[in-house]
Length: 587
Image 1 (spheres, helix red, strand yellow):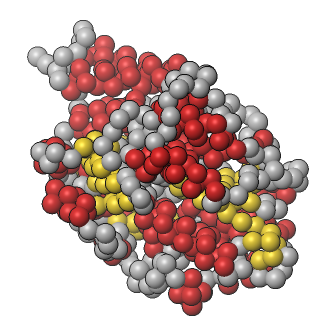
Image 2 (cartoon, rainbow, N blue to C red):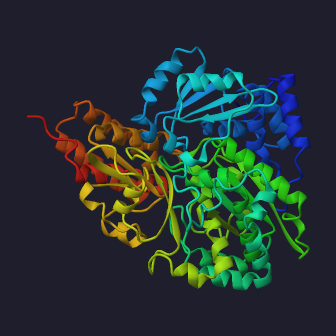
Image 3 (cartoon, one colour):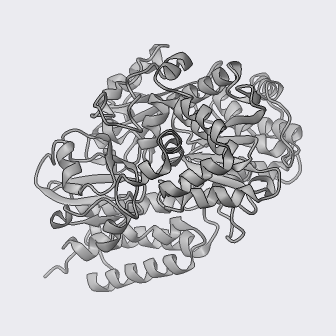
């Protein structure tokens, strides 16, 4: 694709899809431009015909005033977009670490014989019901269906039915209905489509309370609660919001719902089981920080959660919970739902901002930080789903009560994602400070002889069986050289070849690197190559030399990568090699 337009023309279907999307959406807010609609328009094209042709790209670029070469670079960046001819129906089978040892390879082999176009996929966020698949069907309207646990029959079966049963939330939340839950208390207890159900279960009481308290007191309670980000960075939420209060207008609020860390699915469970709680939390956050517009960026592989959030936003607008005069108090706030397109890097906050603006999801240099120069160059507060929904109990019960849960440095309830070799995988809510052993026992224990546990996700660390009494706090995991990260707890029994797990983690980071900086772009490839040689017993030189090279690659990526992806791409791998006799010199 050139900087200049080619002679390629859109088909009538492509033209109709683009026109329909543009005609149903409003002009961009102040500070934005039409380019911010590039990703939604690309989704509209792909959803209609199954791929993005040069003719469709020409037509979209003229409408959005974007250079065609620039737009092609964006379309080609995201894994869910096809820029070459592709069938309208495709099956995406997860073969990442959560599904790898739960039948993914057998499923791939069976689907390959079906004659339907299919692809191997990184984690689909359905690890508790592995193996998982995503079926995409272009048309008018397009359909996307997640299937888990997936068999060849169940995956192919969704091609012939319009109504797919709502997933069994009890399989995702083993604690469902138990007393004492806070963040998960409504999951499975209300109809997630119904605003009335949400209100009957206490919904929007926190919003009314927040309006009574005023912005300064809301932020004060969040500070007193010692709430920190639940996405892995653990930055104090109240301090972030306090800094926004003095920032120039306009300000923006962004919810990061792009959880793509292998083994992570806690946000998806909230979005599918209690979507209105996130909308209420975003309104409170917007009110507290003085933002009148929020953006909810959800990962592209969550079709059900996307539909539920779209429904929740529309219902809230109709009933006066979003708009120019919320609850008659003169508060202005609205939310725009934006869908990612398959890029783990967009979980990094500045890459997410670039994606929202219609660019490739490449991280920005920091400083300046988003609270200073964020979306459209304006101050922006970014929080993830779990962080935001914690605001509801803080407003209702007070920051002091919230801080009394957990430990001095790790306060409140925490969600953990258990998958792998446990008897009852799913999302578990516990107070900070319980031990890893206690959480594993809640999940029924390990289904075999425990070999290793991946803690914190692919960017986390492997720990040994004798470390399972570690308290699940920020300080507790740090003391053993691990991290809570995105809340992943994935045990592996002794039937698993950890060399294959490490190779898959390395492959994940190789594929998901945005390629912007050399240390990560080259380092992740070289890391995967070394692990491939070691796993196939074909080292260059000795095993010791290869391990030394791995350590050097990891150090370079940590020291010189622009963002956290490159800086943590070797963390889990190096922790496993240091703690387990995985690779030894052959005699």
